[in-house]
Length: 126
Image (cartoon, rainbow, N blue to C red; front, side):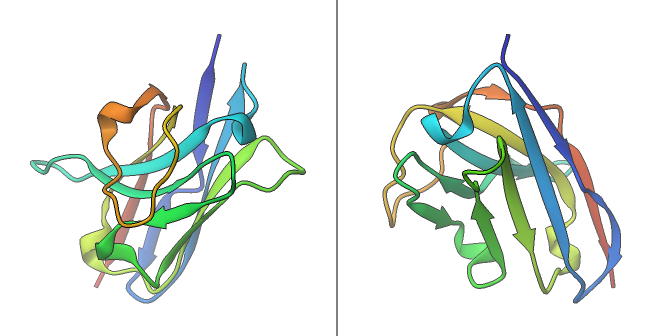
């Protein structure tokens, strides 16, 4: 069975950094598109970043220049490097696996991803 487990969340001050990890079992992450989403209370789920089998990456407009997604060949893990964190980045962050290629300039849609992790909480205080 496919399992995605997120880790690395926590509480930080504005301007600080965090690195989230999504460790997969039951699949090889480099064989699929992988994405990070986030959802704050009362808000819709938002696509944050995605990477596909070719290594193409995209990030959402709200995190461009601050967040980076990667999936090194040496581990079956997808990372989300988050820098210059802001209070509005506070949310539950989820990892997801799908099949659609990542296309620059297109939104990261939750309906394109099938398997999801349980999430890790990120809280940024001002």
